[in-house]
Image (tube, rainbow, N blue to C red; front, side, top):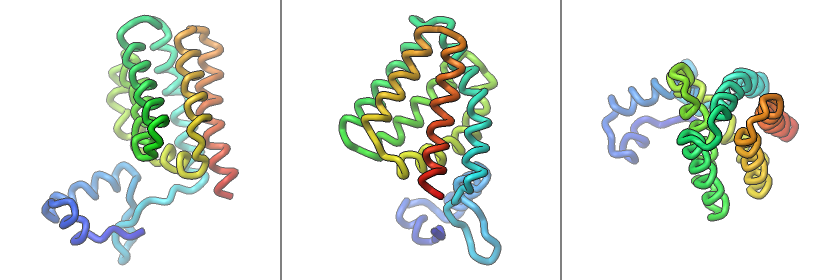
Length: 186
């Protein structure tokens, strides 16, 4: 849908220049697109774009999970477990918005707590694309119980520390999500 600048600036209580700057950032991140002569619209990722995000995400999130597995009882994994619990609590509450946000926060925690300055630096760009994909995923295949089970299993596999199992689980976690979304969208 088209973004109407004046209405949005008023609704948010911000100036139009401030809003324009924010819109430009969201265009840069891929959440919005500028359509010539038609204005700014919410991005509608294609199936190829969704698959591409998952393919970029898999090796990076695998790297993060493997780093976390080096110290399964350390403070980084405590942070990931806390993010998981927040996500599970949001699912339990039935608040779909909080569930969606906590889902993204869990994956962000995996990246940011993995002791990799590079992963932390690139998360904002990749994270915005992951957020779009996860939002579509949640909208298309809303299944809170299954979501909770899959995330518990992902964190459990990281805690167990078996490298081959981690690689397989992260790939399966991400691939299953995009495959199901694409099946339901087509």
